[in-house]
Length: 373
Image (cartoon, rainbow, N blue to C red):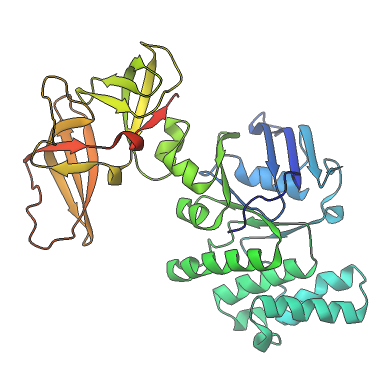
């Protein structure tokens, strides 16, 4: 995927607010920079404000307050048809009575481009989506994936600075959706366009985006690369929204230059980190662990001290979900906390834990997530 190479943003959103007539605030003071050649995903559940933010960018909604700048030009009050933006809708909105070629040409004709330029751009767009041989077909004669590519070609032909994608893969079945994720990324890299996508699908955002903005109740909870969002979530909301996490309440016991210790009654053990964290001793804090980062064993780890367990919790196996290549264990600690741990089934006859076994759950220092809210 294309990384940010230009420090000058293409899109600058400053203190953007959208409040509807019924008093509901859909977008609540968002500031955000998006850079050229980025594939940026706005990720959130229904009602988080992501679609409203996309419509504000497109010019279909007018903000209550704040500014939208595109390439340094204030577009806040510029109507949608005068913005250097194209939007691809969930329904694709192809004209059913026109061929794919005619659909692509339509916007170019509206812009009154020379005939030679219209033909050149249309052929180029068809080549990018690899549908030159289907140019004369009408939308009903195409598969769902082909219609999606045709709608994208219509956007690309106008050569906008920015392409907005509103849940672009939601109408496709899972296999086709998985295939189209990579195709969209390939097209975005090939054209060098800037894409902003709205989606509620975490896997989709993680697979396609160079950066993700996670929205909740009109706010951007975190803006980071997919890896940073997953490995270093900044809040319990993000840790639970992206993937699965076991989250424990605790208090800071020690902060030193090279390490930190957090005590938690929920695990009856200390979490020792290989880094200095922000905060003060005694401060309430939360720690998180991804299930795949938790190791499960029927024997204690080397150096285990039952009087002062560090990065090791003891519990009893309550349930097991066998999924072929891996198993998920539900382990209940003495405090009643249920922890999920996954283990890969590499060896067919290995002595894996089973129901009601007492097990030791361990994790590496670098895999502990620190969550301040």
